[in-house]
Image 1 (cartoon, rainbow, N blue to C red):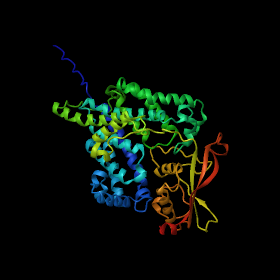
Image 2: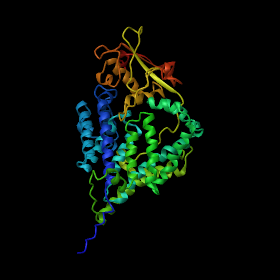
Image 3: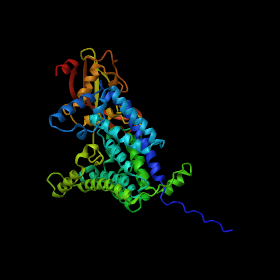
Image 4: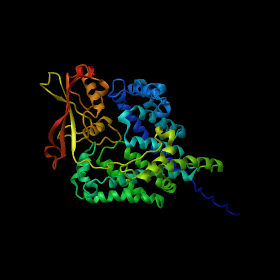
Length: 487
């Protein structure tokens, strides 16, 4: 009796897509969870910059100019409002959708919900949700909606996002003309001037070979990305190594984990099948009809064109005017049109110029007319010479990050910081909840508040503390609640 032939396994399986979506669900779980823990203190009714006020100002402006609120500022808050309950609803809905995606339940519906919910929070979060990883999370989530194992070519969409992220990060450093990057001395400063350093950064700063590390980083950011187009799997480990070092030496919330999720798409199904060891059975996708494949190719081509135009503008100066850049920008604006506010495509480029000094804003209150000043302590940014917090893992402490940005500017140019001080004078519980320690209870806030700058540098030895601290000037003048009420 003739033995029947062994069936050939399907060549198009979905392991890569399956792992990518599970990883993206995990990232969303932590992104929404982290934001949920802070949302009331940041933009709640008693928060630093209430989303209700942001929404009201936007409505007045858009009505005056005859613009559609949903087109210019797409957020569900137009329907739900932006009060405390609505913010809980948006964040809680995001956590539930992230759990559904993580556990492979209604994945397409969950992806759509995650994109709309995060976009809604993005638009009402003011400066607290304007980081590059917020933009990246929105773009990756939208790309995931179009990425399907039924359309093998769609894997190039998340790969192109990864290429743009990595390559742009290298190009902006070169194009900026920053002497520390050109002289390979940037990492002499980076570990202690980055927004929220931790113990791993202090150890890395102590180690030799910073110039060699810069060379390797440029290799990963400027050369390795091109492997994506010829040998995608070869790019996986260099990218994973860079992202691992990034997470081990600094606090970047979910950014490096999200970037690692993009790296998942570089490995073939066979690799994931071998690593999963049949613990997960992922069925082979059915081949789509030709008309559906052609229809699916249209949004892919549109998004890829936007990314390529962004890449074409890299390194080209705005001033003096560059005709090529102007033509590319015009083409980009034409393609993105009314969907610009949906953040489906963005540009990236971390640390284009290296900060070579670290200024920390110390906030203090007084209840006795300025005779005694007591400091507020932040949860993750350095507070004093002996303070070097542990890694925040996937948590993104957005107030601490904004404090770093505020120290790069002035009090007058950071309106949110003035609002923050007002909330401290009012004893706002949600805002105090963003801090590690408040010297004043909510029912007995200080009468005066002041802020001053101190200069921090890493100490060569931890014997007397991790930092060397020297006093600097005042940041804002001393303020009272009456001065705010009189405005």
